[in-house]
Image (cartoon, rainbow, N blue to C red; front, side):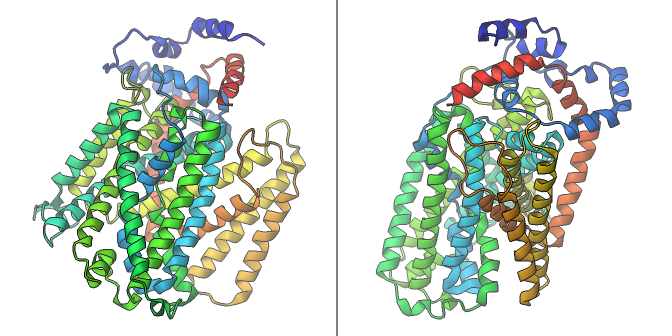
Length: 601
């Protein structure tokens, strides 16, 4: 084994133009040359690009079959940023980052709508079911984040286990999710702020009659709040984290007040009937309130800046999501015990409920709490989106210029600016009614792929797994996915017969049991998902079930967006990633990977 000093010398001796461009530390951070955006040999000139296009089939095959490794993600790609992100976060920071990113306006708005029209008092069960599904995904994210503590989050995890092409599709959807999600939060913040001042949610918006419907309400308020949140995120990770947990603690105190006062004024007779719309209503509500739990994946991208990933990430991620699930259940239960579900206000449930018990002033407290929740969601979202983008750029799926980390702030300023500017433009013009369903589909599909990736990680290791075990594993995996899709289709066709569900559930159970009988090829070093393959298999089923609830339009929009991404991949991405993959020194990568693995522990 070569000592690290020899490995460093080997790295300096690499003569690749790409490596030389990335290793030049003397250049200013604020630079904009062609080699900063396209340093790959393919894009040296038009002739080299045409030559590369002619080799697209072979390069595509290479990229589809290629899988990254932990050493590449944790060591080699980090060099693209030229400067290190600062390791300044503890489990306390991660827990409050999780709280700040997840607890937004959803619990204050969606709860009333679903309790009134779909679930009644059983809205508490809907939150419990959605919380369980989210927690299963959190388990998968946590194991990967502990083993591969890098800024890329699910992008890096999928690249290691499911390959470069799947990771690219995930990367495209992650960027879409980042842009649409941030823009949606900006518009929501603007609406809520306007509602505090007047009864008109469009009070601060500028109407342009000549623009198309849905794009004719210009929203400068959304642009301003997005710019402020992203500007704070660029100043430094530690500063942003402290600001987040201070404001989140205030939110937590308000939520405790809401729960305590709610139960003091509770009436048990309001819980009858407990399930007025049947089991179907509970599951329909669960599919909707699930979006109140999204945002935790942003915290997983902070692993690279965590002081001790093996301890801090499980405590921060699993701890925050467990607490949030309990809080959501208590808040929804308190609401339905304060007010009969038929009398709940669908638009402002908690505010009207407090007004009904003579605490009119409390509605302003609830509104400010919701507004603050959206603000911290934007703040943490900005941090997470920038780190996703950074790792995607490190892999050269987008120009590596976006991966550069500022030497003083330790933050990826260019990546933050990319998501900030695009989300500001979208939030300024559009109401996002169409794009919101694409966002939902992207989120759930990535959560499902994360569960698949975890099963692959446990049961398949190249050159260790026998061909027979590999085939059996694939059969079991296809049975799990196929049976989950089958049950989802039956449910969405309003089939209420027990035969189809029994067959589908039985096949899912057989697939899970069959996989459980196969030998595991990898054991987590520090922290791992319990009850594998049961919990990841359950996560696959629940996420596919929720995807099925989105409707046909969401599927078409998702496929159209994915088709555009594939065109970009064939013209640009496959060539940049191919050049990047084949310019590295494999022996050096293996050596440095061992060093990095020891540092994680």
